[in-house]
Length: 629
Ligand SMILES: *[C@@H]1O[C@H](CO)[C@@H](O)[C@H](O)[C@H]1NC(C)=O
Ligand SMILES: *[C@@H]1O[C@H](CO)[C@@H](O)[C@H](O)[C@H]1NC(C)=O
Image (tube, rainbow, N blue to C red; front, side, top):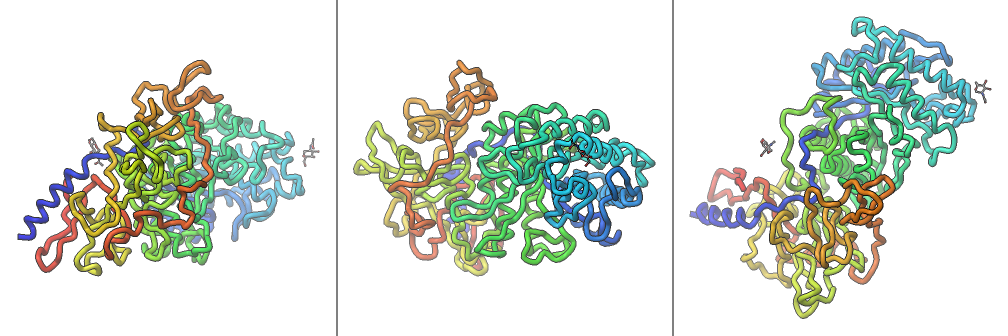
């Protein structure tokens, strides 16, 4: 009999969760992918190497990046500048062959043919023959023409002259069945930005690879390799004009190492970097492909307990933005307290979180077309909501909707925050209609807030229905049903557990014709795919001169201004968080802990993906049937 009641309430939940289209979600039919860096793979004993490759294949990775250089056992194949040991190249060739054989052609390789760190003997790279030649004059590698010719010869030996031991004597530049792309170098000019000398090297080497060594005609991508080293949030290190302007560059490789912080997840900088249509992505679209070639866990004062969550958050942000990524890096040894992820560990270690992200990457959508380099997956996900991080530790200072968390609508964030460009953000003082703002018939509140007594009121996020038996009914990682747990259901609007404040209003479907929109004074107050129209944010439609649209100086971009690259750009600069409406007390803003005990784990999102309902086990046996919505 209770089943009937549950069925009834299920129905109402279903109608309650009417489609709320995710803002800024990628709808294009192109695919993204994930992969890994695996320096030193070629040095493993064949048996171990093959085991490691098997682990990579199983992980859902589609790309593996290898480095040519000196590692622990073997020296760099260019023993002295201009003289090569073919047997050392055979070791790499054997590795390519093993990858191709074990993955049945599914895993492709990116080769970094040299590492700029070897020029200085840093980053565990021994000082190599070029390092000895330049003798500390690092920039000579790029600006000295003689040395540049030597480097071109190195590339020519690797990709043209070396006859493959395993691929019938073919040259590597023709092995497009196993090689996806080749870096100019790993992190050219690493640590130096802006580039002060030898910038012409970049296009010279790219053209050499693409045209002279014929990577281009064999459909093997020329990749920049992380110019100037790690990308800073908001900076342009990895994508200087010289890379965009060079015809021979196919892929801009981006390296970034971001940590979990008080006000951001490790994935937040990635979500901010790749807002669809922003300066970077609009400029690249149709011209260059963007690849996060290295991203990594960074240890913080919170410790290794957050490693899995931080890895997953980064993959998730990049999957949501449709930018492919490679984790840096895998090892077959112990990972200790490093960012390394060991292939030998069980799935309850970091490798499990990485695999989870890689699997999701393998069906993620992208605005960029990679089909020239990788076959399309059989199906693409129809991601309608930002998935929740299943690896958030129980003891985490935040489990849902905190500043920096990914969101697709207001109910993905704590009620005192706004969901802006897919990130939960503390509103600036100037943001109209936030909690505490004055409101009236003309000055409206944010859509999730009510205007009462002339003030936009605090509200409480709709809590989860807790399982009767919290131990049996719990999700795999949490004691209680965590906020936004897709395994659980949220309370109906008509439910009325004791509550100081009303529940927040449900956000209107993004595409609903009667959607009112959040209040604004300028496009900077709206999402990047909206514009400000008579005080309210309106969704851009196809053909509107919105973010990323081509423009000329005299055109009016609805979202802001026409940038120097001829694209409508987003006017907002990262905002300083300040003002009376920001609770400096930190994470637990209004509504955060509202509701009766046991339902206090936080707000639950109105979801439209299949939801499971926790049914008391003494009444009904079966549970966990997805509910169609
Ligand atoms: C370039 O490097 C070579 C090799 O170290 C050196 O002999 C030559 O003098 C350098 N050329 C210039 C212009 O510095
Ligand atoms: C996504 O939606 C399309 C069109 O509705 C459908 O054909 C496809 O099977 C869906 N993909 C998945 C993975 O559900």
